[in-house]
Length: 306
Image 1: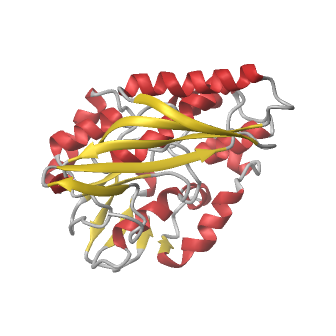
Image 2: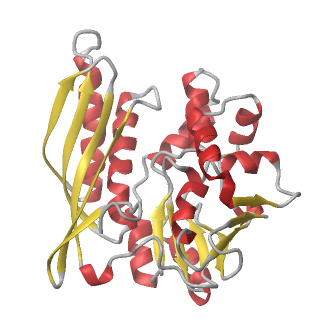
């Protein structure tokens, strides 16, 4: 499994019952606290392994840091945040690489393992599958407001908690209950990643606008103009496959394109398992998990939001 279907991670088979999972991700700061930034980046880097149903084992740091203009204590805090998140995940840091760069960036390359017979792909959903999302949307909008100094403290706290939360528990529940397809929602937004489920398949998708979990501060911040550039680019790229019902609120029309950082898992689950999946997720502490749509044989390759 490689780049042919925009999968979350690369998977290389070593033996009949063993394959390695590899992924890499890094980005510029989206919050002011360096330790929180490190935790968020760590959780985000691990997420793609969980989305495939794998178990991350090792990680290597990737650092771009302006050593001449920024205090080294900031870098120490960032790395501490990332390391603590790895420890929480049971992952070992085995090295990394740093360069002197005018713009701060941090992330990780991660290697994990998986049984190649149990890999969860993003295009193997079935007609009638229910769609479950495990984290609230709106981190892109809130991050944009943070950069402008306009985000309420409560919204910043909630967003940091969500972005720094591992998808480990959600993955464990997913493997216990069983799913037909999975991805995680990150930079391309809900629609961008949901498109992976239906493009070049015989399926279409319906998203339930009123069921989507999101941060309560996000609608007002979006209305005030704190719209990330990535949201606009995501909408321009995928608007041709999306149809909104007339009743869909304007905010939801923006939210589904909002670029997420360290977002939740997005699963296609057999309808008879959907309620059990949500119940198990809630019991495991994944409180935002909700059924947000379904796969259908209608509208092949298209997404309807209603």
